[in-house]
Image (cartoon, rainbow, N blue to C red; front, top):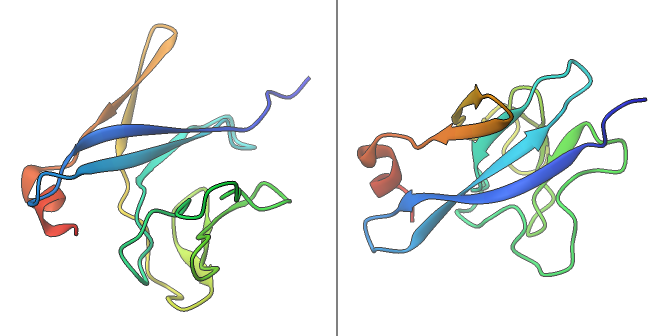
Amino acid sequence: MDAELDAVKVVIGTNRYGRPVEGLVVGPLDSGEWVAYVNRCCHHPVPLDSRPGETWIDGAKQELVCAAHGARYRMKDGVCTAGPCPGEALVPLRLERRGTEMWVEPPLTSVLHSLR
C-alpha cells in the first residue's frame, strides 16, 4: 500500500520586514523521498497557496501549482514546467530525518531577508 502524498506548511524564519516565511514539506514522492521548498512563487512573491480553499498539488500529484497565476513546479526538483516562469525553480530547503521526525533546515538569513 502506497503512502498518501501529504504537504505541510512550516514557518522557517522571517523576512527583512519581520513577516513569517513559510516552507512546504511534501512527500512521500513516488521515489519515497520527501522534499521541501520556500513557499514562494518564482513569478510573483506570493505563497503558492495564496487563495484560501485552493489546493496547491495538481490532480496527478506530480506538481505544485501556484494558486495566483497557475505556475506549475515539479515536486521532485521545484523547477517550473508551465506558466509565467518556465525554467525557474523554487528555493529548496534541506530536510533531515531524525527518527520518525522530519526536520527542516532554514535557509541562511540573507536568503530569508531577500524575500518580500
